[in-house]
Image (cartoon, one colour):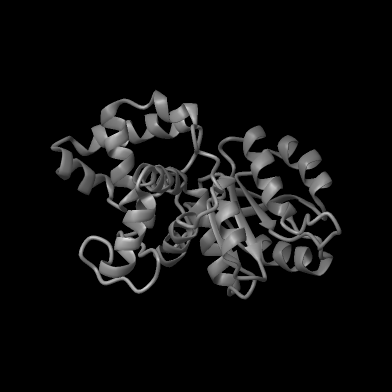
Length: 274
């Protein structure tokens, strides 16, 4: 993570705040304004204000509260919708989700909305500052444990990603599909290059092309899609029979105690996440 401020000559990181509690916004503004390499360019108390103000202010980082108050229509994850909409208007914007709840569903939705990081409000002030510098530098603030939880979540029976029959997948070349599968296994660029006997720079360029074709902005989103594709390809005729066998004998030679045993892949290196 980027724990040190940028050089004095560098432009300050422009930060936008979204939280429905004024006290939280005031505290965040006081914290960030004391940092020489950061400036708070605007704030909002709700989604409507954020979507109206942020695009004109062109922040580098948006710190967004996941839940902007519970409502009857279930819009208690409205901050995630703001993340998705702001990234359409500002593709280079890094969104850092801030929440009081350690919720796997919200974590998954935030990542698929293009969030660069996801942190709890219990975080120390100095660690939040570090997180903002990290995502502003184009890196991810997802640790391996959070990445593992995202991939475990996507292995559930419900198709949250909507990739079934996705036309974007048909745009990938055989080599790109191979690289996508290795991303899903958690391999870094260097490991993929060694596996496929390619230059590391070639792998990086191929991954950029994959992200463009899949219309996602981050490596973890591609990893989620890869996992869903793998799950679908292993399904089909005779799936019930294979499931019964896995319940008795396990998967890939591992003992299984339930109807289905999940594979355990190494998670993507957060330093590799775009």
